[in-house]
Length: 504
Ligand code: UDX
Ligand code: UDX
Ligand code: ADP
Image (cartoon, rainbow, N blue to C red; front, top):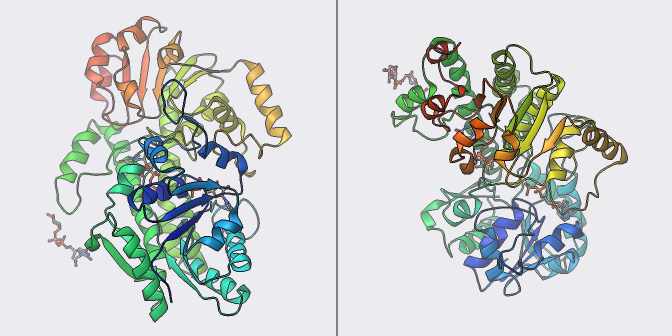
């Protein structure tokens, strides 16, 4: 049914499609890889030239450590970024569908279900332009059974004699470590239909991965299992964080220390030490979206207690963010009105410029509602993105998370809200952490960028108002004892109150 793969097209040049297919091109020099997107400014950014001084590719639409070097090595060799979608589809033996699947903002399932119209429109496009048989690979995180819908669309619309096989091959990379994760994945999951051509398609995709992944790490399952495993893995990871965050609240009220509790629990091999960092909440494009998907799926299957169970993980996350904000306000004598608060970090985690679902957004909005003056600094998030996130009403379609997208998705009322916030002088976007902290009464660590740990905290202290408060949203991130020695009043997630008594 399918010859060995020589040409790959990836539809969607985002955080998943871009890095994934770039690494694939690097490891498979014998395969031509074309990454296409409907957004011409995003493709232009992927094709941007190196900085003339440093030689680095700084204009890429996705910031990922190590990505620029790999793009530079492969671009123009066997890696292409293009808006010629139809041409790339026709040339490909295998097509990754890696488009966005945001949570629906309106209609049936609003607030829970995934919006699949990007997946559907790319599937219809494949069906209408393909002139030969192909393997179609669902890469975006999608609700269960999407592959089966895609198959129905392809079968109903394809030309005679053309055969499509659908695979599910979810991506498990984490932003900030994407290149490392792609190079050395814990597993590659391939879901296929249990038919001769389905199994052959899975073998063909497996062969592509075997160029750099050990065969025993490639796990083939049914389509449904593969689709559900992606949602399940993210739900389980998110659940671990909500669990540890719930225990952090107990620590703060009792004098236990969440770092010690997490370490003690993680020593049990059945629990393991990873992903037990208590924080001011998890963010990112996946966890909330996938939990909502799982809740929606459970509801639609009539499994209400299951839906309730996973809804609890999200509720705990919302509460963790609210609790942290509340702690800032209550510690600062129950008012932050007209007080300058330095917010360090705006991305949802370090080493990315992505702000989707970043806890920093919720925290900043809460501080603004309490009439604080904010100085925000993040090493990678473009200033325009911060303004957009601060004013964007979550009930409206989100603007593009990308720098360089030309603001095409912005509407005029959003522009007006941004202009109004800028002119109010309530928010300053600083160009360094030290600058953000000048004259501040509190520093809030919202994203654990390495540079915040190694900041000249003595210099920060000397330019702040006194008492100088530090709120660490990531347990174990800052050296609390050292900061206290300098003179800071420090609150960290999950740290018990007995040390606080010394200064209250
Ligand atoms: C996640 C999954 O890890 C990845 O496998 C999947 O493909 C996509 O979703 P990502 O969202 O990029 O990846 O980053 P991740 O490292 O999982 O962090 C997500 C959020 O959880 C961040 O806000 C982070 O601060 C938070 N987190 C993580 C914690 O609060 N505590 C932890 O112990 C770990
Ligand atoms: C448990 C803890 O494992 C142990 O560390 C603690 O000191 C006491 O409580 P125990 O209750 O003796 O030990 O047995 P355990 O193997 O944990 O099983 C408890 C229950 O969980 C059993 O009913 C078992 O069937 C069930 N279980 C365990 C599952 O349903 N699924 C699993 O994956 C593991
Ligand atoms: P993810 O985090 O899943 O990669 P992103 O939003 O970063 O999601 O990227 C998805 C990309 O898919 C976007 O660049 C978007 O423009 C692109 N896209 C959406 N629909 C289509 C389509 N029908 N054809 C080509 N590209 C598409």
